[in-house]
Image 1 (cartoon, rainbow, N blue to C red):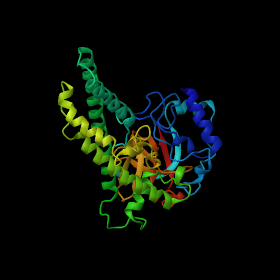
Image 2 (image 1 turned 45 degrees about the vertical axis):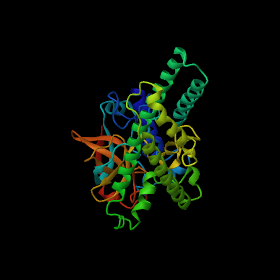
Image 3 (image 1 turned 180 degrees about the horizontal axis):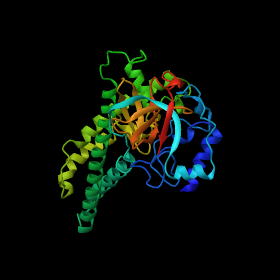
Image 4 (image 1 turned 90 degrees about the vertical axis):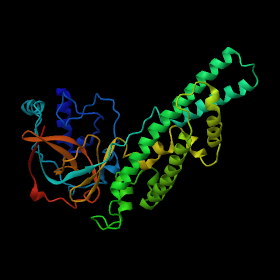
Length: 359
């Protein structure tokens, strides 16, 4: 692990910025073997996407500290690596706000929300129904029926549960962002526009390279599709037998669902792996992060490990605000964040900076 610490220090010194701190952390906690500010390059995730790509032009999109540089006095000698092993990195910065309210981390249940798998299970049961019509209902045919019935019903229940959690979570995010919707945001902007840009992590990239108007229009389309998706899940859950023992119990429900599956109203939900909810660019920055509101009223896209009461700080050399947590006589580094209204130096005042020890 000393190699990771030394590498992080070398990158800090060479870049004169804190981009290395934007390396996503795994979901589920901190490494016990490394200081909180050192990336664990051995971890395979899952991760939230980076807010900006530090190896492309998008690395200049945020200037929360007005382009300030990390103090060049940082040393990477043996003594400093020893200190870093003990956990301490001394930076300059200050607290600008505190996390007041959080909504649950946005996660996509890859295993249980794959609509292609649902479609395959539906097709398999449909084929069994056709085979049954042409058979004499032998014991072999009935066994295949039971297997197909159980498999399909199980997948449907998983999709219903996982989809409802996901949809409810996104709706809770929206409700937090639009509290007192008639009042303007701190920047004077419309709160719905702020929510859209925060959800996208403030980056107008990918399919949105033509500008924010295109992104916002795409968001509106996605939100409409999400409404269709929620209606589908509601329809899917209607009259589903709890524990069907045979096809006879499931068949009336299945026939109605098969009609839904073939309906033009829901066709778009099954045309690509996963669902439109996951693959849409609107959500890419938001997955594995939390939405939060700060004490001063700012809205932010925050690390998955963030907790209410954590501090929002600006650190010299940083392109974004960061979330830290009080720890003994210093701070634990939680992660970078997008805070709408702080990303272009609006809250930066270098005269307020003081030493902050990150462990």
